[in-house]
Length: 358
Image (cartoon, rainbow, N blue to C red; front, side):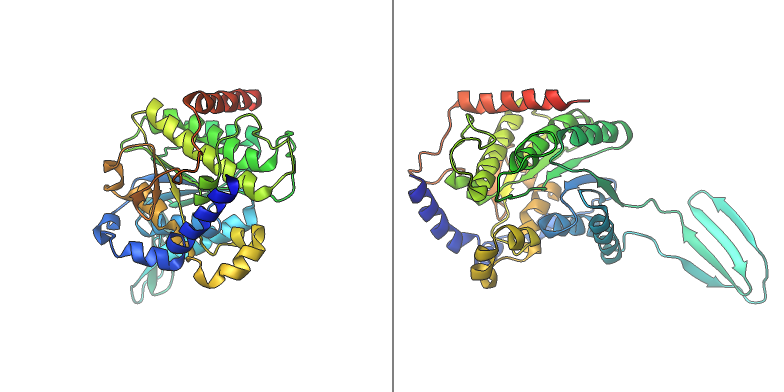
């Protein structure tokens, strides 16, 4: 059955997941859907320093949204932040007014303006503008770090939209410092803890949303709740990643049924040319590079789900591809899990989460 699923999925991918697939789908997009002003709305994006996460952060910043970048590496995160701020003009620049033959050195603050007059002949006026792009350093594979961050953030900040984008595909079985298989820890447990920890905060705001970046690769997998950390048989990183992505889709469906106040969705970005694909799937990248989507194409549906009024008109809990809700199973693929298995997945994750809760 796995051979059948993989074959059907790959043919589907060549038609739909490539750059040409996006371009065909985009002909049916409503351009006005993303003609939105996001001022005052706060978006948390995990894995926001590169690839689809960074492209998503850029699009949200361009529309005036407050961006919280949750990243593992401070150097790369700060560099990405600087680029996003510069491109989006998300900081108000200094303005200079020429005032001939005046000499003084005065600093004062009046409501929103800081006027610093310290040069003969002109006054420099800087608007006191709250920084709209923030960096938070969190290793999503560390359950305890995720807990600590979510608890601190909930107490001090507001979030309207959570975008679960961070992910990894480790091709050799590797354990974290907490003793968890790394793909599972990052893609599934980290996503589970961050989402469930922020749900109470999300319920306090208007139009709360959670968008999880899954993958069409999950179509090749049936939930295996009996081996979440891939301890049995030969380890396959690509399969582990796809299994994690199936888990994310199931969690999205369950959260949607349990938390009606929040709009949940998962999505497939298509086959995009990102640093993660280059690193984790070098052979696939080399063969498919000319056909791969750009990062912006991959991010388009993420941004649409996070920002567009049209997205929340769709039922909560669905799986999207190119702004359209699509099936979560291939035809005749026997990939459906039972409600009992789905329930067990959530119960096991809750047990893991509580084990690492501070």
